[in-house]
Image 1 (cartoon, rainbow, N blue to C red):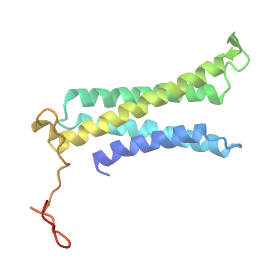
Image 2 (image 1 turned 60 degrees about the vertical axis):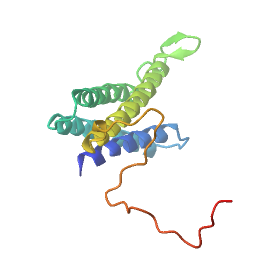
Image 3 (image 1 turned 45 degrees about the vertical axis):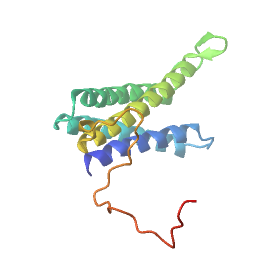
Length: 163
């Protein structure tokens, strides 16, 4: 798989894992599917960081990718604690338990990861297409580049003159 595809694929894996955790489906299947997605996310974020390290992409993109992998390790550790129901009966304040706090942190880190994954994918895509080398005038929003764009689109029907 091409690197840009793996970077965008990470976003979709994270989206599916978040969506699955927010879907009110009962039973053990969603839990185990969430675990499988989590393992895949750790693997893909590691591979993305390693593959980006071997490119000439700017350092910031490499650092964001590496920190996304590091966050995947944090979220995996939190996931293990959640699976083991650590702190289920340990109350903190106002009815909040340690397990509730871990669940909240698991979700927050997942949201950070999807944000960082999107930033990495977009930055790499722009770098690969050399979009950083072309500046635009303030207020200008050019159309996306296309490899074989015709000089002028054919017109259909008769064009009426302006009054």
